[in-house]
Every structure is written in C-alpha cells, then in structure tokens.
Image 1 (cartoon, helix red, strand yellow):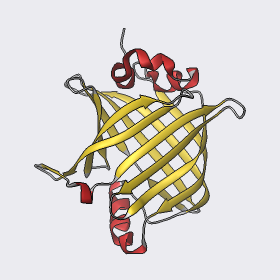
Image 2: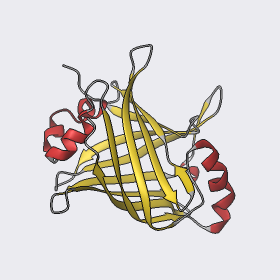
Image 3: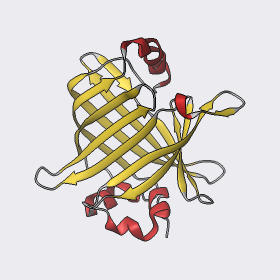
Image 4: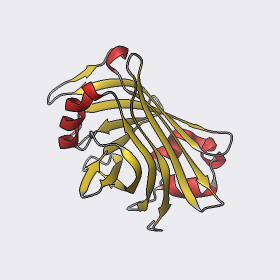
Length: 206
C-alpha cells in the first residue's frame, strides 16, 4: 500500500494528527488537494529587502506585497517522476487585487535521513531540509533546517546569517470546518522576513 512522503516521515505519529489533517496529507496516488481561503495577514520584511522580494516573484518564490484579508488558494498535487521518485508540488497563490503572487515549492522524501527535501521557487532557487512533528492539539508543525542556494550546476550551503528559517503550523478548526495555518520565516539577524496567517477550506478534491 502506497504511503505519502509525509506519512513515511512521521510513521506512527501520523495517526496523532487530527483526522482532517491525516486526510489532507495522505496523498494517495494521483490525488490532488485544493482549497481556498483568506490570509488575515501577509507581511514582508524591512523595506531594504524590497529588491530581493521583487526579484523573487519572477521565480514564484517571494513577493514584495503585504496586506490584510488576502484571498488565498492552495493546490497540492502528487507527482511520480520518470525515475519513480514521489514528489508533492505546492502551489500557493495570494491575490492582491489584480495581482497574483505565488509561493511555490516541490517536496521529496529523503528516506535515509527521514526528512522532507524542499525546493523553493520555479525553477528552484533555495533548498531546505524540513523536520515534521505533531503538536499537542493534533496539528502539524514543520521546521526548516539546513539550507542551500540552488544554482544551475551546484547547490551552495548557506551560513546561518543568510538563512531564512521557516516555522509552519497547520491545524484544523472543527468549529469553523477550516484549516488554519501560520507561517513565519526568520533570519537570525534581520528577524521576520516573511509571514502569513489565515484559514482555508478544502474543495474536496482527493
């Protein structure tokens, strides 16, 4: 029986997730998760980072816009590569009036180290190891670890002072029947460089 990359990493802890989060991260063959919602707050870092964020939108990585009550869409799709590698594609879209901004990634399983490999951007510009854990409330927590800059023919390890370490917490709110997510990307010197928080509801495509 096929298991998703997230289920393989979490092993028996997977069943400590809220049932709706289990359903969301099961990813059976050829399954798609699609949801829409609103991010009550989207924030960037200091103004002097604006040129980097402006460039980031070209690669569907980061973007310079910020705001409140931003319409949001997420699509997760499982992909089996030609070499048999299982991947999960993440497309996150933020709608700032007439502007669409993306925060996309492609995730793989590293079975030897029991972690998720996350390639951010299209084409990928940054790489991060991801560690998964379960919160007391049955939510999923994702923490980024080692990071690399991705160039055409080489990946360069980033010193901590240049890293943007992410903490993601996703829960399910039964009272509203929605998924709630908090994402914060921090640099040890700058502080928060990117964050968003809000809720979304599944369109029931599994």
